[in-house]
Length: 130
Image (tube, rainbow, N blue to C red):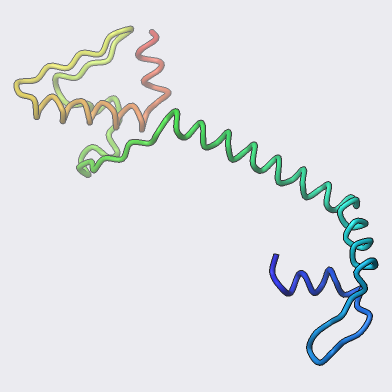
C-alpha cells in the first residue's frame, strides 16, 4: 500500500494536523482499521485474490504441462494444409508415413506435417480416424 492510500484510510481518524503531518488518535485508528478489516469489501477482495491465484496456478500448470515450442519455419510451410503435403508424406487411418533420403529431408517433411496438422486439425483427425 502506498502513502496516498494510507492517508485515505486514515482520514476519518485525523484529530489534528501539524504542518503537513496528520495526527490520529491511536484507539480511533485501530477501531477504524478493525471495522474495515471486518467489512464486506475486504472479504470480497480476499476472495477475489484467492480466485485469481487459483486461476493463475491452474493456467501456469497447464502451460508447464504443454509448453509451446517455437521454431522458425520457412514461409513455404507456414500455411500448409494436409492436402498440400510434400511427396513422401501420407496420413491414413492409424498411420503416418514419411519417406526420405537424408536426415535434413526427414526434418523438413516432419515440420511440414506438423504445420499442416496445426493448420488443418479437424481434417487430420478425420483422416487419422477413418
